[in-house]
Structure formats: structure tokens, C-alpha cells
Length: 319
Ligand code: ADP
Image (cartoon, rainbow, N blue to C red; front, side, top):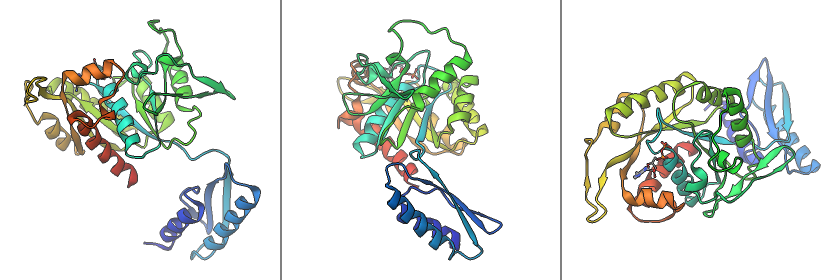
């Protein structure tokens, strides 16, 4: 560990995670300090302690601290697929619920502007977000996950005929909302790999992406396209989730594999990314999703399957 690394580690404790990673150039250390909610005395005391510590790092002769009133940036986890209908929205909703149950401060954005489904999946269709100082205030879903979807803003059933820039604006509004103490934002991406996806990624810089695919080869080819898109934009790939993997018989619970097993796992390996787990095709998942009762809120086998994937994402986030 270099002196700068160990100072960065000390900085974390000293500021309660409010400081950015320090950089040193030509003897000058620069870092940003998030001071929202601190009194002037607290702020000055922290800045003085940072200065004192920084000047003990060999090679540092000056310190510049940029104070920002903004909260720390949200950690965006994008959930994406190459095409629609593979269960991207179902996975996003259930990951948000499972992460919340694991103790994370998590919010959910439905970036699928043309086909928003999160309001239904999370039973929050009847809520309308308020706005404060030009920022939207997320609605609360019954399971306690704050969320925003285009479905909260437009009349149900009204088709959107927007062009790219309008979609990007709307997306920006959903993401730059007043998320309060939310740290991790699950973003249900629009399906596909076009301009809307690319500009969203470039503008909002997700900390990582989870790719969803069904076991069929064709869907996997689409998934590969999504992987390429995120790789191009230098977004870390958290891993691949196989959805509708095998059919869980509603009567006996036995899982059969009409599309063959293991395709997604092998594909993940080939693409050099982690395999996060599989969710079976189960009528109960569809029924509960339609009823706005996410399976991840419970502890049955499906709840456990979503939880296991959420645990892997939590591990990734903690790294
Ligand atoms: P996408 O967001 O990729 O378009 P959705 O999450 O909307 O896909 O899922 C498409 C349909 O498939 C929905 O009706 C959903 O309830 C259903 N579905 C998704 N995953 C499963 C699953 N594992 N088992 C059964 N039905 C599922």
C-alpha cells in the first residue's frame, strides 16, 4: 500500500466517507469533500484535519479541498438486456426488493420509457410524484423501495411518441430526483442497444451492469450485443443472470429444461464475466409480478433465488 493509499483509507474514516479519492499532481493534493448537512464548525474541523494529514504524505506540499453541497453520487446499477421480454423489469424490481431486505438503501428507476412496467410490478400505479426545486420526489412502493417510473408521470395507456432527446431528458429527470438517503439505484434499462441506451450510459455512468438473458441462443446473441455496448462505454460488467431458466412445474415443483440447460452460464464464461444465477420460468413469478407482489419480498424458493443474486451484487458493491 502506498502512502497515498493509506491516507485515502484514513480519509474515509476521518470524513465518514464524504471525501473523494485524493489525487496528487505536482505536489498538490486535490479532493472533493461533501459537506451537505454539516455545521460550519464541523466542516472547518474536518477540512483542517484533512490538511494536517495530507501534508504528512511524502511529496505533498499543498492541499486543495473542493467543498460540495451535493450528496455523494448515487451508485447506479443498470439492469440491461439485448431485447425485450426476457424479464429485465422483473429482475430489476426483485433485485431492488432483495437488496433492501439485505439492508441496502436502494431506489428503483424504470428507464424503460416506452414500456414502463415497474409501477405495476411494485404496486405503485396510483401514486404521483411531487416535485421540489425542479427535482422529482420518488414515490414509495408498498415494500418500502422509493421509485420513479414514466408510468407515474403519464396517463396510463397513453403511448409516448417521443424522440431520442426527449427520452434522454425524461430519463435524466427520473435519475436526478431527490433520492434522499438512497445509495444504490437500480435502473431498469430500456431494452435494446441503441442511442437511447448509449446516451444514458454516457451521461449517468453506471457503476456496473447486470445483463439478463433467457437460455435460448438467439437471446444470448442479443445479450452479447448488450455486453459489447457496456464494454464500449467502460461500464464494469457485474455479471449475467439467466432468467426463465428451466420450467418449474407448479404442481410438483420439478424443474425441466425445454431450452436446454447451462447455455447462459457457458456464454458468461466465454464473455469473461461472472454468472450470477438463474431464475426458473415459473407461473408463480408471473402471477405475483402481475399482482404487484414481488417474489423477492418472500422466502420461498423464488424469493431465495432473487436473494442469492442480490447477495452477489451486494458483494460486488462492497468491493
Ligand atoms: P422485460 O423487462 O425484459 O421486457 P419483463 O420483466 O416485463 O421483461 O417480463 C416479461 C413477461 O415475462 C412478464 O409477463 C413477466 O411477468 C414474465 N416473466 C419474467 N420472468 C419470469 C419468470 N422467471 N417466470 C415466469 N414469468 C416471468
